Image (tube, rainbow, N blue to C red):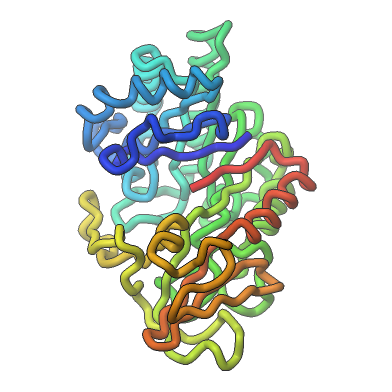
Length: 362
């Protein structure tokens, strides 16, 4: 599997006709949000969905690529907890999804409630029994899809944290009970270090450097979910096609280490980065994201056409432990952790060695 997300806010800049469907087995359309008191998915731009989504599905199916609707995301998961806690609300949620599949001829549901049992975005509701109730939803959703489409299997996938589901404040050590009810889960092995911390570090390390930064990684995420009972053939490993900028407090050329003191809060990222506030949660932190899309690292001159050499004013380093590149600008003290073909090759080879179902791209 090669799974890609198409964020529905990209329509204006990235027409669906440009998607290389032949390179993907799945496109997850992101996002329907679950923020309303009725506990039903909705779209911030319903008219865009109705006008453009049918074309996406048509083009995808022409290349035998499946399309799933992703529900939730960082800013769209406020009401998952109360929804899964109610049998009536779960049924309404499932009925809504079946109606959506019927209307648009999609191939399943991708549940992007990324942090059941955890706060995540500042306005999300959560409870100690979220994981238990999520299992109920998966069972009921699987049964409903199989009954409605007995000859056309509809998939259920989920985007998940680097650790297994949280139950009563602790990561679960055994999630095997969930396995029969989903087709695969997408491991979000990125956003591990970033401008929310006071130490620079890799956005998506292959391995973590012991004692430095957040101790999560691509390798450890896969191990965590396997150890918890999810078979390799139901795991897809997430990879970042973007980087994160941080404001270092020191000249990072001296030590050659990408772990240095930094200022909390992101500097401006690429030309697409702009001041942003969560429209659904005033309690969430607003500001710049510091994100650099891979294409903009190249088009704005930070990375040259060989994908390795740094542009004017920047110095490129390679970390042999985390197997990731990073850039540093001495004049602005800007640090950027990102992934490139070299680091992605390491991750893809490991996914193959682990016999995973495939990979996912965000």
